[in-house]
Image 1 (cartoon, one colour):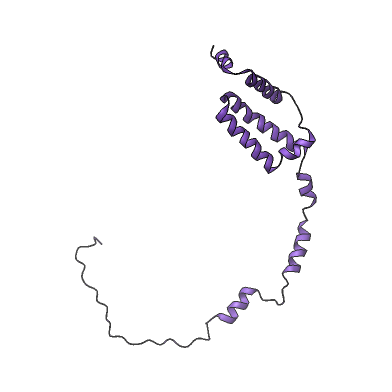
Image 2 (image 1 turned 90 degrees about the vertical axis):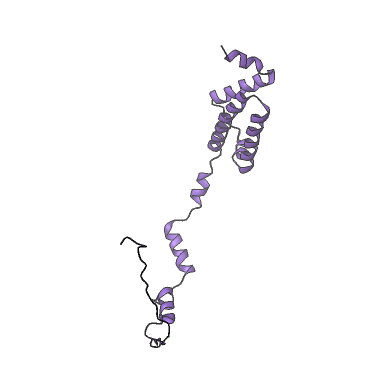
Length: 151
């Protein structure tokens, strides 16, 4: 079987890390609260990404692929330990409050909208001069194009 040959190529440290990864995925180990905030931040995501890339370059590919699953579980378990959704929901104003704030920021002085105001001031209809045509010596000529078109 090919599987034992792969395990023979792993060093003792890689075997220990492989066993730790499998145990972390299989067992419901919760992330400590002091680490969950760090992991569930942009810096934590960057560190996890750098570790993943370095494992693909410098370690056995089996460890690297298994670490992708470990990283997913780590991020998932960290977000469960420190949920951020509750604070977002608490600070989100209702639609009524938003409407009141928008009306305060955009007072309407008259019944006309901005578009109607601009059209009334700038429209040339009814205020322009009559069209004046200037005579020209140019006379366009249409020539016979022969068989350039079938129609």
